[in-house]
Length: 159
Image 1: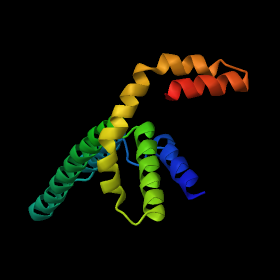
Image 2: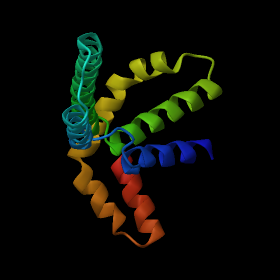
Image 3: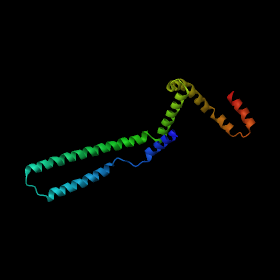
Image 4: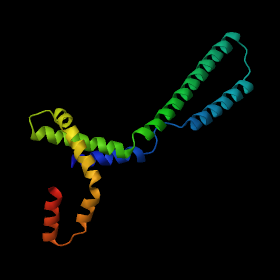
């Protein structure tokens, strides 16, 4: 049951709505803020130089913070796009399956599953290559409907 939830979670990763604001949305908000600040500066006359300097410092630091936010958001977009290419659902499901296999192996044996897989990998790869080479013979066995003929064909195949 837990493995099914993990696979559903992997599917949800690629179907959920983005929680990070898009760069275009940030630029729209910034332009709106800029226009509102400019309207304020145009409509409100100023008399004191120090207060005007202080206000200018606040506005300039805010614009610097906004620029850093936009730059950071662009980097998040780049990372997200790269992650979507690398961490596809198929790969994540395979990793989840391999992790489940390792856990089952750990439960059924006292030996370390990683060591077991490393020792078995050369033999398994040879079996898979050999299977691939004779796959056409196995495909012919699939079409056999009579059980006795299938058993005879299988025995011949195994020899």
